[in-house]
Length: 193
Image 1 (cartoon, rainbow, N blue to C red):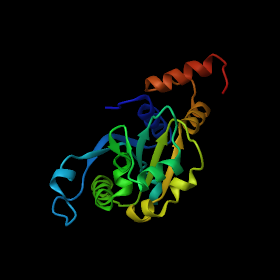
Image 2 (cartoon, rainbow, N blue to C red; image 1 turned 90 degrees about the vertical axis):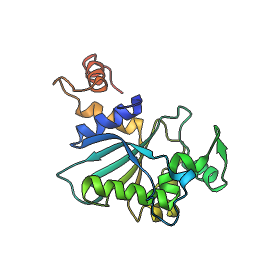
Image 3 (cartoon, rainbow, N blue to C red; image 1 turned 60 degrees about the horizontal axis):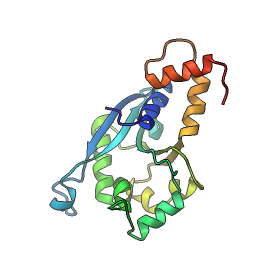
Image 4 (tube, rainbow, N blue to C red; image 1 turned 90 degrees about the horizontal axis):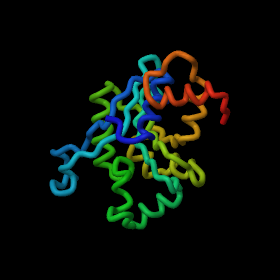
């Protein structure tokens, strides 16, 4: 089930670009792994959207998308600082919102799940955000994240990027989703971004 509007937009964006999608894909560290801690790791996490494009190869074939629809925006440098300093945000440690990037055992669990679903451990990890505040490179090139994901690329995808792309690709054929249909009506009205 698509939980929020950002997940719905990611779904439409991926489908408009030829991807098949799955939602709320559960993963967790390997229970037999040496780093596994029952009380910390027994509850699975999930990836909001996984997109698979059968005609593409390499890391572009699979997109693993974590949606962060924070209305205040997403500041990559600040978020990294909060993670590095083990800060608590809204009652949770900052790293917990990105466990698959921050903790190797969770990254390994994610990679194993993606390989089980797609037959490949290669993918692009995408952080989809409502609004980006700052330089995406700080997040996309952060070495500990890249190491945990075994070199798979990391990308930030903004709501603005998705809407611009969807708006350009929207035509008069009835869209398959409410979001797509809304964009069609907006485009038909003559409004331009």
